[in-house]
Amino acid sequence: MLYPTFPDFDANHNYLQKYQNRIERGEFLTLNVFIKESKSQPTVPRDAKPDWTVRFPYDDEDFEPSSTSIPVNVTDKMLSKKRNVWVTARLLTERGDRIAEAHGGVVKYDKMKEETTKYWLLSGEICEDSTERKYGSSKEPLTARGIPKMQVRLVYDRTHYPRPWKYDHYYPTMYVDEFWMTNDQLIKFKTSGDDNFTTEIHFGLMSAARWRFQHTMEHSIKQMTQQYFSGEDDEAIVQMRDLFANTNSYLLIATMVVSVLHMIFEYLALKNDVLFWRRTDAETLKRFVSLRAVGLEIVCNVVLWFYLYDQESNWLILILSLGQIGVDCWKLTQVLEVNLAWKGVLVYPTFKSRVPHSSADDYDKMALIYLSYILLPIVVGYAGYSAKYECHKSVPAYMLHVAASLVYALGFALMTPQLFINYRMKSVAHLPWRRFIYRAINTFIDDLFAFIIKMPTMHRMSCFRDDIVFLLYLYQRHIYPVDKSRAFDEDFTESAETEDQDKKND
Image (cartoon, rainbow, N blue to C red; front, side, top):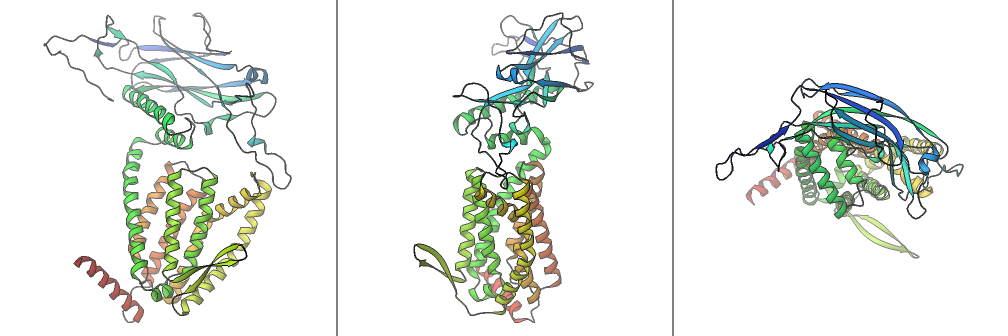
């Protein structure tokens, strides 16, 4: 598909005539670019003076990309009439023959999406960034945004195709490539008055293989948007286009491979985590594992689930998040008896330990108290900062945003109680190390995704945060090796070896 080949002879051994590119390799061509305001694609006279000219060789090895910047003045009158500033690219031979022409507007008109207005909470005023001017009819309002970069592509094609009808040659294709331009890259105009911005016009060669691949992608995405998504600007489609457009091809292939590995390791981590909690008795779990950390993780995951739901995240992510919450809740039932109690019309859970009180409870509680001393000023400070300097849809949305941001930024603090118990017990023999290893591998894979996939800054920070936690666990494993002179280390080690032997026998 990317590099097609065609036979020289047909089934009757007759020679098949081919038609080829009329432009020879290395032949010099001229690109003239014209800028003109118009309601529709303008017709540029043959003798018009170009605003930008490029002379170049039609050769993929000697060609050098070119670019220029043009100032664009957008008036309210122009936008109200749905006019545009058109860029017309005309390709000429050395003899002055016109062989290709492409057009593109620097203003993109699109259907107005329903966006919730955001406010400054302290003053109650509407944020300017959350409002845009509307054009067109009241039934179908439109928005207008500026295109910061216009890419003019000339396809470099040396393929000999089967000859159709009477043609014996073809000219290279030239077009304005807007496929990779997503809405988050467009320039928002002011809510009133005229506006100015700068558009960069970039001219470059595109290989025939990439051109075919992109056309196939365009066709596939168009079909997907019609069947499964709300439009070409759906968040999933935007991320897919951004990934293919802004990622090195080798890194993209590596990402696809490690994505499969990520799913495998995630499954193995979950499997070993469940096995550990199912096979370890309640007394050992309560003695060595921070139950408060598990409870905090449930609360944080619930907060993040509501935040992702509010941000209209993909349903697959929401379902996986619910699954993780369910597993964490099941963990608590291995050590605690959970019952529901009524207080009037309200229902709330009650917890009762299955085993007697242990010193680990005191360590767990002590770690949580120390942690609250550190986190409380940070929570109050960030909440005040967000209320004063950030826009929000409502007070509940503000509270959810603050909670989710703190969970993303300070999630590593959830592991502090477990680290503290390890420190006081001077032992890590009780931890599910297989699960930690699988999760650690996935953490480093997440670091790769953090560089190439579009995501909130807080979520990107959380990927590197998990690296720190795992390194702390490795350090504790180094300074607290398994000591069989301690009864609980020996018991736990023998128990683990017995379980491994049972699995082999099964």
